[in-house]
Amino acid sequence: AVQLVESGGGSVRAGGSLRLSCAISGYTYTPDLMGWFRQVPGKEREGVAAIDGYGNTKYADSAKGRFIISRNNAKTTLYLQMNSLGPEDTAIYYCAGQGLRVRPPAEFVWLVEHEYNYWGQGTQVTVSS
Image 1: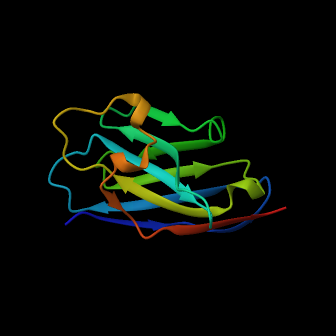
Image 2: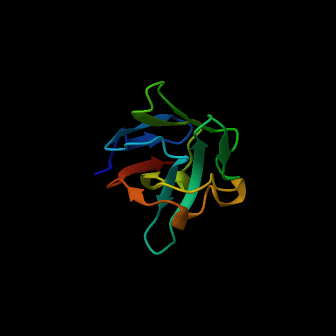
Image 3: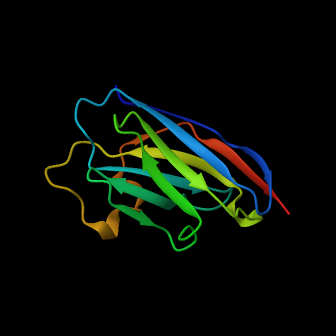
């Protein structure tokens, strides 16, 4: 079974940085998409960043220029480097992985929640002003 385990969350002052990690196990194929989502209480989960099997990336407007999604060569760990953090980035951050697909998904759905089948338990990020 696919397992995704996030780590690296915590509390930071505005302007600071955090690096989230997601340990990936159980895949018997290379997923077309891996992504990071976040959620605050009372709001829907939103896509932050995604990376495809070729290393192409996509970011939410709120993350562009500040966040970087990457993974190690073995594709066993997914990262999210977050810089210039602000209080608006406070949320639970989730790692997500896509299930087996017949064809790679179109880019416009890369940050759509229902495109992903596997989810980690989340890690809390709190940014104070």
